[in-house]
Length: 129
Image (cartoon, rainbow, N blue to C red):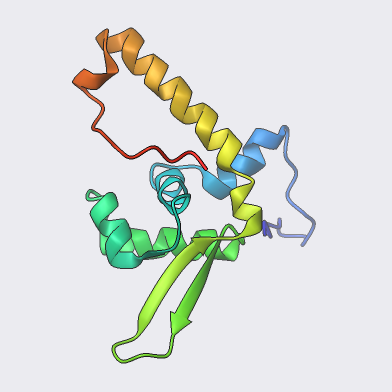
């Protein structure tokens, strides 16, 4: 979980809760990773296919951060070659309502800006659960 401490070892202070949320899931890649994990466990290669602009190094870094914050868990299978999968933790599933709302807002924003979101939004499966 968040373990950011100042030089004194005291817990970091936040002005509003959204600061803490953005610290955990902010940035370009983490919300996309979480979004794609709503459909179930994924291997690193599957996430790379779903998020083609992310580099392997960045994906690994972001997954490690999400794992540290207990949003995702890494499952390693004892096989040759090794198989690793990532899935959301119960805690990570708590982000679904927030990301759903961001997704809906983003779609409405695209309609407003482009007149029709289908001009710029690729077709994805529905991720309703």
